[in-house]
Image 1 (spheres, rainbow, N blue to C red):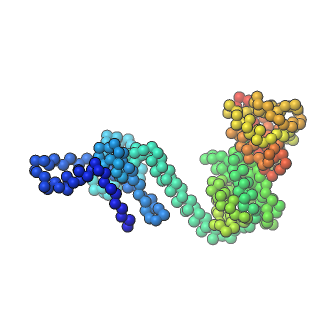
Image 2 (spheres, rainbow, N blue to C red):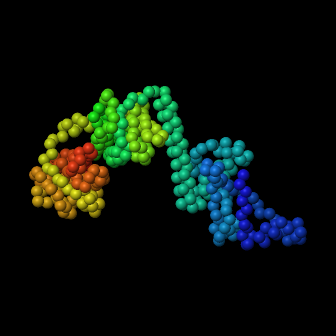
Length: 393
């Protein structure tokens, strides 16, 4: 047990001494004790590096009572706490009444007062408490998920899929993840579809307005062909560990993939059961590009970031290339074209391109544009255009 002495402020010494010497005081100098007021104090505990930690506040120096002292958050019951419309979660008021040895109504008031005092004490403090609580829940859930994945993996023999360089795989995951979206009705859109064969490993994602694909050359490949969609959140959480591993051995099981890392703990990522959209049929049906623009990536990004509207319009002619009214030096081949995009669709497609120059393959004002590096073709993104006024086609 840790014992610490806290100095008493000078302004309280006289009050404390008078209380200690109360028996020596004259009877008529005593004041009747103040009536007790229903109130609640909260001790917020969490595990720490050397044992449990408790949350305390320092009272303001201007307070009349216990100024500048450390205290647990809490306070008295007020009219807000007796409102029956206040939402309730957790153990019932009846359970709290048994714990606190009081009536159900009083227990409800005390619990609501306790929560209110914590959250009302200070906006920044309340935010930290809430964030810490949510982070704890997520950490616990993540630990449980990892434990379950380890147990499941131990029960099944993994299928070797491929071996790739860790930093390269981490880059590919981050690049392709920009084309994912959280869609409750279509969870597959938040995942990355991985296809592995003897000569290549391809990562693909789509949010229905973009389609990003990155192809890697494996260090080692399996003889069989394998494909599945992997949970994007799990991959995002594993990226930092993947990046620190020289090589990553990918193994597949019926419900997840195991990423065996060099000198680090294995990472497990769940599979998404929903089938991935048939992107290959869509790619096959696309017409050949008619206009090609090669432009410096940084110059194009700067023009996009200076845009004042939600959408941008590209104008490509043999003698000029514009983003809205902003001229940019570029090489343009093919017929002139004018095409518009939502900024949130087109900017990520450009920003994740590899190399100093990007190539834009245009097919028409209502057909997807292909964005890729001018000298490397292993990362490709398709971006859907919109009407000039910004309405989706």
